[in-house]
Length: 366
Image (cartoon, rainbow, N blue to C red; front, top):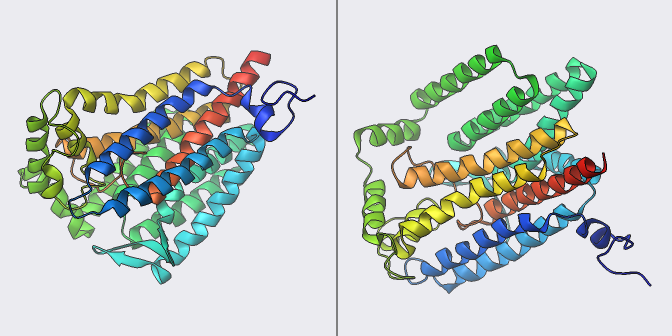
């Protein structure tokens, strides 16, 4: 008789569950619970109970996707992510034509009762595809893979400029630069990429009024939302004022996204905020420990890049709440409200857990 979830179980669930690193599920599930608390706290402001119900539905779907992706065989997952990349790029191509505008940006596609943001969903799959092409180049020295990578990247950059979504664009450029550095490990390349990044930032500043406005306000200290965020953090102190008792959520728009971290600190305290902030690098460290004996450059570099993306986006969201950087509108992974963001990070978390499992298995068998 087959023993379910053990070595002799040949099903998708059983054959992969046994070698899965279960501890890596802890962080995304903790973040999910914190996200539920944060969104629940917003009920009674401009949001009704419908917000928490939608959040739980999005979260349930996202966690199901995370678990499904973590159980796929490694090669099947890589192929699946490549297909997703192509699909989301096609969706990104039609955003300028069929997308709808919010606050001067056209980033979303509406399908009856659901809206999606293709640029958000594309992050994980495209990083894996780009890393795979770089890996193939290092193995074959065939310039076709590099040319194809840069053609795809250039297409995505142009489409993001058309929306415009400068924050997401800079994240893509940062992660793709990291991937190139990981594969080629060249100091001159690092300096070149740094200048390219600075060039894009200057272009964005002089070409887009909203970018210049945010940067100028940040430098001049004129952003009232950030000032309110800092005041709320001070009010929260070490232990917070209690769930639902914070006042910041009543005085700023988009409280479920941009300043969710400040709301958490106001209600649960600075110590809790530090706990939340450290969850992302802790997950990074846990993953790195699971691949101490790497045997596949693609797996190692892809895991590192996806974890770095996770930490980078968390830093950007948190940093904008505490006046380290200008506000960007980026979500806090698995905590902020938003179906596209949650599904995007479900794909990323699931891929990292899957690749860690396969890498660990490979390393142990070698």
